[in-house]
Amino acid sequence: MKAILLGGGLALVFSLLGTRAAIPLFTQLGYGQEIRDDGPTSHHTKRGTPTMGGVVIIAATLLAYFLAELITQNTPSASALLLLFLFVGMGLVGFLDDYIKVSKQRSLGLRSKAKMVGQTVIALVFGYLALSDDLADGRGVTPASDHLSFIRDSTIVLPTVVAMLLFWVMITGTSNAVNLADGLDGLATGACVMVFGAFMFVNIWQNNQNCAIHHVKACYEVRDPLDLALVAAAITGACFGFLWWNAPPAQIFMGDTGSLSLGGAMAGLAILTRTELLLLIIGGLFVVITLSVMLQVGFFKASRRFGVVRRLFRVEAGHRVFRMAPLQHHFELHGWDQVTVVIRFWIITGLCVAGGLGIFYAAWVAGT
Image 1 (cartoon, rainbow, N blue to C red):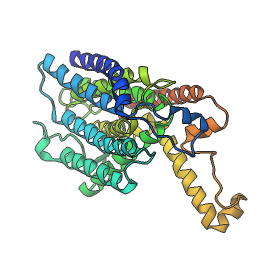
Image 2 (image 1 turned 180 degrees about the vertical axis):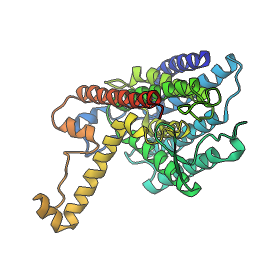
Image 3 (image 1 turned 90 degrees about the horizontal axis):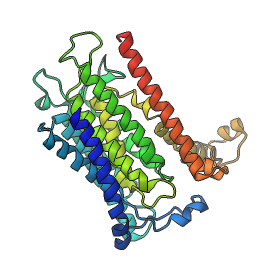
Image 4 (image 1 turned 30 degrees about the vertical axis):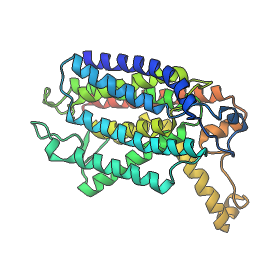
């Protein structure tokens, strides 16, 4: 517990001070944000705001984690190192995307196929290592499991290839979901604070009820839960410190460097804690935002290609469900102030996190 408190506190301080130093540095280097021309006109005033702030979040997390381990004289675990590999790896993909944007002065960075290749390589390497028996502990528990999980491993065993495919879908999907949510000042950062904070408590609870200690039906078969809690605490603290400067009106953006790394770590925690399906509830805001984009694009294309869709819904070709996607921009164009959208979406995240933790605890009480 001492390491968790140290990790979270140090990451907050490092991020708070590091972001303050990064703002003038990134401005001087010309790392300014490019804005979509088809986006809300109110966003055009943000052009030139420093971006790539995710570098600070990643650096603060790494420094806090390893310093906390050094102070408490603990050895980094295989699970934590795997999670940090995923966190940094996805951040590198996002960094390349951001760098192309700022160097070429355009709102589009890496091509979608190139970005997906990078995310896929990182996700598959993570999945392979997480399922490897070489990283199993003394009881034979590997960092990840090939069982489908909600609160803990179920009786459904997935073939290794299917498990790897599931990990790939979760990691690429969640990283892109956080990226889609990162469209308003502080929205994604504040939501990530709550989600990673929730996973920190999940890991602490799993450590206290671990099967290595408590041989009962409701115990949790998770490798290195306390060390995973330390990583979750460090990311929570880093996001919290960054939020000071990213809150409306933002003085810096996290960029794809931050959003892809945070989304990857979020999925990684769900995989390593055996709460894969629970992520859909705890990260409910990111699910809804992603679905809004899928629905917008899907209906737009369907209404253009298929007359039956136009007749069924009585719409014209190229009809859009929302004024603009992702969902947060729809409410902006509907007349909501940006701060109102952010705060209300934070409230929704809080409700999702509370619901997810409630289900997690209720399942333990019920012994299932």
